[in-house]
Length: 326
Image 1: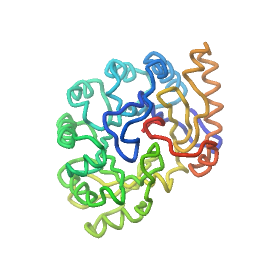
Image 2: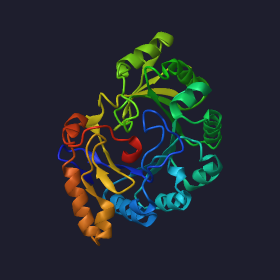
Image 3: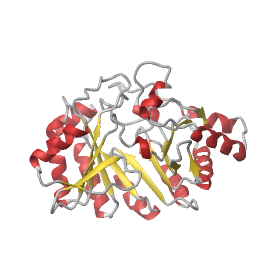
Image 4: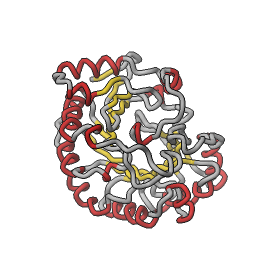
């Protein structure tokens, strides 16, 4: 079992496979995109498989594949299939914007993908275009229906933004009436790559109060262990509602996660700088035993919470979530 210096079990890896995305969401990256990394700057599939294999042997039981948009990178299905066969890995899941995975849903079900987090910030076509700077709402909604048809568990992730999509909160909650999904509203975070300055008036308390105005009978339900969301249920609804206090960082005390960026940078906290680079360590010829010791050392140094992690950053300015890994 992997443990940090605060006695927290670390069993969850978020692995970003690319920084590229086919959307330009204002809370994630500039409208013209980023300075995309060349293929040689990314970890290869073989390198990612090696690191995942090692971490699973060390105690990681859950891996979430993120980006950018993971399915922009060619060769995802064979990689996912190899991950699913790792002995000791209990769950493989994916975060996606839903625009590219439609044709792969049957294969994802066959591979045994345990869950999909679907980014969806609005149900209005015009607001979708304003937020994502691309069209595609109908395709995302079709992907949602396909995932449910194949009985793949779905969580919808919505970033709540004061001047962008607050009018979508209640319509999105209404999706839980007839669909067995979790709709989760996320406090806006300072990871837009400089394209947007977050307006943080809509914190977790205000989001909940807004929902309670429409659904006064909404009930708090038990949060699963290590949950990043505060979870609620509206009587007679098939699905649930979650609120993620991502900026307030309420879930830090029970954090069980580490992140690996597309270039191999390891982060023990979303708000911390990369501790060291796994890709470089592998290309320098380090053995699995040497990598294991490096990983243990860095995990032991995991900050107590996101506020302490933020103090470790030397660079000023906003990073992009696509560079960090969503």
